Image (cartoon, rainbow, N blue to C red; front, side):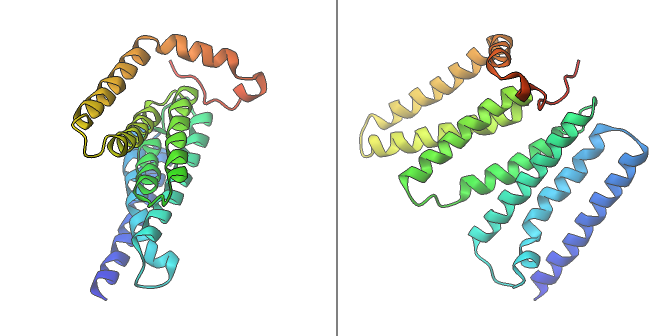
Length: 210
């Protein structure tokens, strides 16, 4: 019972942090004030489980599921703020939202090869979303997810084989090479993406910042 009571007190502190941060933002338009708000909401996702499930005992999968939905909510709110403000009030929301969403999703038991493949495709989508939103945090987490899936495949393909270290090294070099190529051609990639995206969809991009 003590542990549940302690969780309840954490929830009060997290709520107070979010409230104080929002009040401060109302009077001081300083983007870094969103950091303690986003951190508290991310931490809250771990302490909300007993309250949402309305019981003291719950599985790790239920914790992960709550983390995924809280992370999604944080990403949506950050996107809305990103479209409406010239100052960058969304960075910390994107970061902790991705930690909650991607972390919960990556720790879930996929259960089948098809689900693992869908997980890889979702990470590829996150990498494309990073170009659309001009947010490298999506690229980082997406690349980690794709690399994890390729590492999983290489382990099973080369299981009990002396070639496994070489396959893993190749994947690491491939990931670094892709990162370097993207860095060198970032403007060209974004320009191509801008050309192929239909006009009506472009209005949903966040405001540009200089």
